[in-house]
Image (cartoon, rainbow, N blue to C red; front, side, top):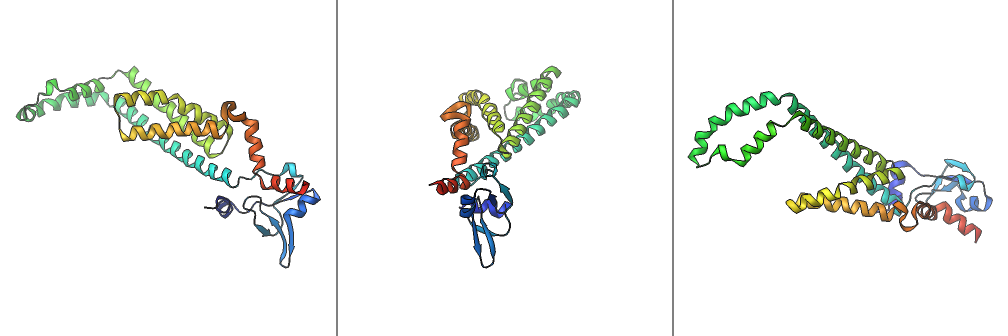
Length: 251
């Protein structure tokens, strides 16, 4: 897939008229149908007035090629974070609902359990010693302080996922830091869960989160890795079509 063409198809071409004569001549071509300007994203020449003009240093940095592909990946991850936030918010709402009806649920549970004892005895199953019933009874008798802690954790985690999604979608560097830190904080917990019980869902979630942290730290040069922010900005500028043309004009 040509990611640059895909970007132009969705957002339109990005043309710019630099003030520098040599560079302007490389980006502008006169044709029988009118003046054309080279798109800074896909490289095609487009008929019509440029979308911007001024010194080359003030030209916008347009994502193209590899950078555009990476932006698409980050936005997919942003959507995944927002889905997580919605699920966590739904769980928090469920805990709130449970807390408000806890007393009635306890009464219903203790009233209905004896009715199932004769049926359970037919299968030689003692409900009074059932670990499942014990866990349910323990859950239904959870203290309000415990439920408040669970609610606070779920809401806080949902807000963190929401912030990660916003940062990743907007392609902001702070969003990459929030996503890297927020995801790595929970990796030890995921490892602990895997030591207790290995499931395909847990393994997939761990691999995705570990890959995301490694990708952000290494590829985006976070925390000073591979030269840090300065090296990352130099790389972005070196990938810019305007920078390429400027180098060619100086040679």
